[in-house]
Amino acid sequence: MAYEYDPNAGSDASDLNFDFDLSDTKSLKDLDIAGGGLPPGKYVVFAQEVTSEQGKSPLVKFVFVVKSGQSKGKKHNERVFLTAAAMPRAKLFAKALDLVREEDCGKSSVRRSWADAVNKDVVIGIKEEEYVKNDGTKGKSSKMTYNGIWKTNDPLVADVVSGKATAGATATAGAGTGNTQQASSGAKDTFDDL
Figure (cartoon, rainbow, N blue to C red):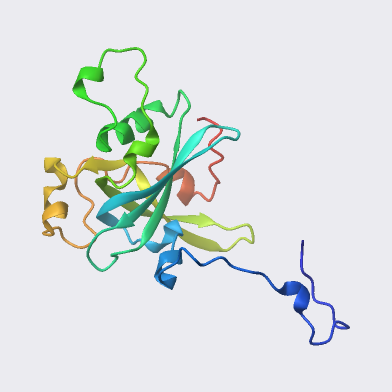
């Protein structure tokens, strides 16, 4: 239902009432789920939630929560498409989240549940992208770099896990990749290629 201003409506706005179920919300900070909340850098996180979505392209959606530092408790949503074109990234996520093992390599069918990723710790790399909004103004969003997920014992992110990383550092392998050229041109990614 769309709400429009009605100058004859008076002060009665009872039709705008809405009941929010906050029974599972411990703090308003828990409601910070927008991906735009994290500045560029690398973060030790845990996978709080994993859900499956079916649409034009099948995907899984992760909700990662930062475990320490200034952004402790902030959340980042990330979608991983499950199409043939996107399978290398999906496999990278499965590897970082310990869903696949060395002995699985070479097998044509390895069945695992993304639900097993819940509560697992990983390091994620976040970048900031500028885009053009529908109204023509510019906006910024935070998203993971294309291959920006590592196991916490990966030597490439040892400084992040130990807490010795420089704030906002993204110089390790995998940082800075993704759709930066497309986003900076103002084009929207429709993910049709996935």
